[in-house]
Image (cartoon, rainbow, N blue to C red; front, top):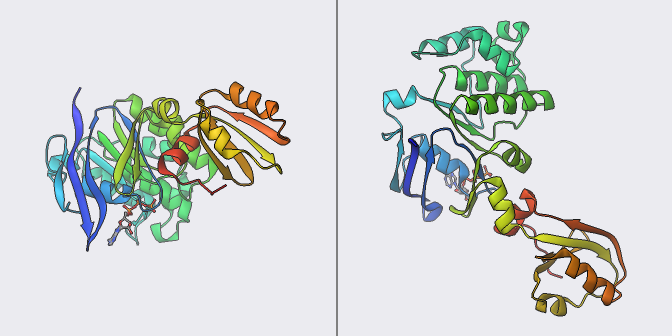
Length: 300
Ligand SMILES: Nc1ncnc2c1ncn2[C@@H]1O[C@H](COP(=O)(O)OP(=O)(O)OP(=O)(O)O)[C@@H](O)[C@H]1O
């Protein structure tokens, strides 16, 4: 299958701090890739380099086998950044029409209004009079206007209300079904789980996991048993059990990460530990995220 994005040994250093360190990956046509990671993990920096908006300190980026700034690469690429900046002084309809003109095979204005939920009143508004949420809808329309093969969205749903979000993801799925390649960053893990065919998980400037949401959940996120207790938990004894892989406290609950929740429950009952509100949890993406990025732990 055609490689749309190829990134080799990408590094970006700001003063003497590495924001991105030796990152390599490629993305094929039709993939929907979520870029996840905690704040400061290097997601935006990587996206900026992919788009040719920032030059790498080392390594290189190819989009459609060429430089991201090449004219016909730009014609095939649509972008919606975190800060949607739209030219003031124009009506929404005028700016969408203006952007459509740059492209050889743009979507119709009707299609763009339908997929973004902009109504006739919105189209007549001057861009500086738009609310934050309306601005994002316009930003989305502008990103898609040229009927691009490759779309980048940096935290696209921040500031969108629930109906705008729903419509946005429905459209992304429709665009993916048309064979478009889509790359987005988000802090809403459910969005990645629902929409992405692949997740790239960043931490401290490197990729620490790369796979489908199911692969990431299955291979890394273990099952766990969690509960509330006032008893002293024999931590060392639990950690010595072959089926226990981790144990930690979070939000007043003890979590025992395991390959076999039945054995953990049996142990709890055998030891007669007084526990309340027992929850047995199978792998979830947020757990995988927490385990992989180490964002959850308190010492117990
Ligand atoms: N222009 C800059 N100058 C100096 N340091 C920068 C610059 N841009 C980013 N950084 C640093 O690079 C690191 C990665 O930042 P980046 O914005 O790529 O993270 P991110 O994963 O997108 O985070 P967030 O989820 O908060 O948007 C951070 O430590 C950040 O402080």
